[in-house]
Amino acid sequence: MSAPPESAVSTTDLKKTYPAAGPRPAVHAVRGIDLDVPKGEFFGLLGPNGAGKSTTIGMLTTLVVPTGGSARVCGLDVVRQPVEIKRRIGVVSQNNTLDSDLTAGENLEFRGRFFGLGARDARRRADELMELFGLTEQRGGNPFEISGGQAKRFMICRALMHGPEVLFLDEPTAGLDPQTRTNLWEVLRGLQESGQTIVLTTHYMEEAEALCEKVAVVDHGKILASGTVDELKGAAGADTVITVTYDAPPPREIKALADRDGISKVEIHDGQVRVFAAEAEGILGELVAVGAAAGVGVTDATQLRPSLETVFLTITGRDYRE
Ligand SMILES: Nc1ncnc2c1ncn2[C@@H]1O[C@H](COP(=O)(O)OP(=O)(O)OP(=O)(O)O)[C@@H](O)[C@H]1O
Image 1 (spheres, rainbow, N blue to C red):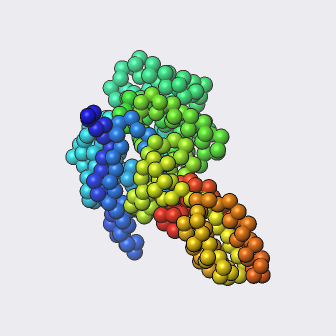
Image 2 (cartoon, rainbow, N blue to C red):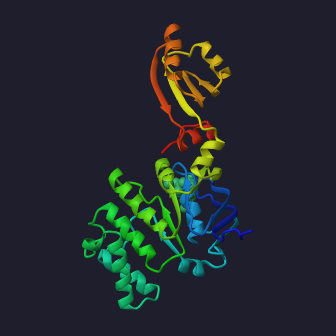
Image 3 (cartoon, protein in one colour):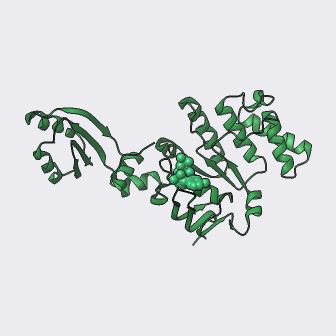
C-alpha cells in the first residue's frame, strides 16, 4: 500500500476569536476548522463575505494568532515556528501591497534579495517569472499605475520569487473584471500543473468550480461541507433548484409536489416556493400554471442547475450572498 500523501496544510479544531473592543462584542471568526491539504493540491476555501476565510488564511500564514486548536504548514507549527513557515510559503493578500517606491519589476528583485538570492540570480528569477506571466513590458511601471490584473500578477510573481512550497491567495480575483479574472485563472492553472500547492480563498462559486480540486465551503467560521465539487454536489443531492415568487400566498396544491418521484424537497416561505428536483423538466411551468389556476401570479422565477450554489442552498437553506 502506498503511503498517504504528505500534508502541505493541516489543521485541527482551529479557532480564532477576536476579543471584544469597546462596545463591539467578541467575534468568533473561526469556530473549529479541520483541514488537510496534500502537497500538490489546488484547494479552495469558499464562502460568503465575513465567513472567516481571511482569518483562516491569516492563521495559516502566521499573521493571525489562533485562539484554539492547532495548524501545521509544511509540517511546521504556526504558533511555534512562524519564521520557518514564512520562508517556505508565498502569500498574496487581497489588496495591492506592492512597494510604490520601486518599479513593479524591482519589487520582485527586492523580494529575491530579501530571501538571500544574489543580485544576478534575483534578476534572472524575476525575468523568468515576468516572462511566464506576460509582464515583461510592465516591469518599469509604477505598481499603482499598472492595471489591477497586472498588479495582482506581479504580486503572485513576488510571492513565487523564493520558490515557496505552498502559495496562499486571498481572494485573488476580487474586484477584477471578468476577462481579467479568467486570464488570471489560466495563470493559476499553469502554476498548479507545474506542481505548485495552492490554497485559495474565494467568494466566487464559479472560481472554486473552475480551479479547485477540493473545496471547503465555510460559513460563520465553520466548514459546512468539503470534497471535490462533484462530491459536494453528490452529497447535497445533485438537485436543480427552482424558486418561484408569487404575488399572493402560494396555492396549497403545490405541497403535493413533494410526493412526486424526482422531487426531493419543497419549501414554502411566505410567497416563495422552492423545489429541489433531480428531474426538473416541466416543474417551473407547472408552478406557474398551478398559480394561474388559483388566480395567483408569478413575480419572479429562477432555475439553478446543480452547482455549488445549489449545494449551499441545500445545506444552509439560504441563498448564497456573494
Ligand atoms: N481584526 C479583526 N478584529 C475584529 N473582528 C474581525 C477582525 N478581522 C475580521 N473580523 C471579523 O471576523 C469575521 C470573519 O472575517 P474574515 O475577514 O475572516 O471573513 P472572510 O470570509 O475573509 O470575508 P471577506 O472576504 O469579506 O474578508 C467577520 O465578522 C469580521 O468582521
